[in-house]
Length: 196
Image (cartoon, rainbow, N blue to C red; front, side):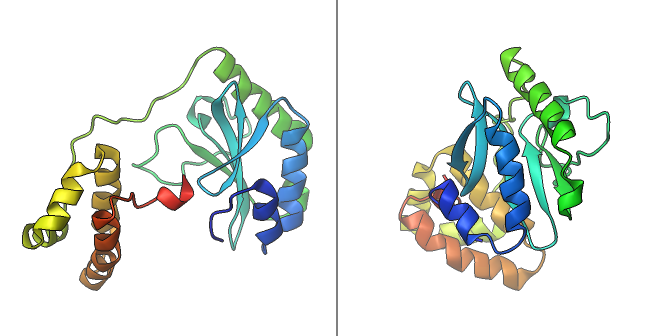
């Protein structure tokens, strides 16, 4: 599903798990959380801090806690969906309406809000060195305009592009991705700007 501009648009466009995520939405809205759209999906905040989001995929729907690693997770329902990439984010995946335990979800939400109130969080590592994949370096070396545009990008945007190329397993996928991102770099855009 493409990123939505409003929560209503997100829920309306949701083909898979619509009833389930609307049920989760009701739970979230019964709390002090504020509903916003971030990264094209519903995100719920408290005191301006991201607390929890929800999303529907083909095979499951779920909740993600932005500081989930700090939650006690007594029921062991949270997982790290991207080992080695995410430090704080944790997901709670579900595959049926009967897995939505309102009381348990509210307890997790309350604990997550308490973390915000206490000022506890794990900040992303923004100081990690930027490694440019050889394929991207070669393209930038051949195209001085693209190189100049890439140099003007914020470090976080450069990292998004570098990671996007590094993550591709096959050479043809790397080249297809390079073809896609080169015009974006030339326009001074970030890879994920459409979700911001």
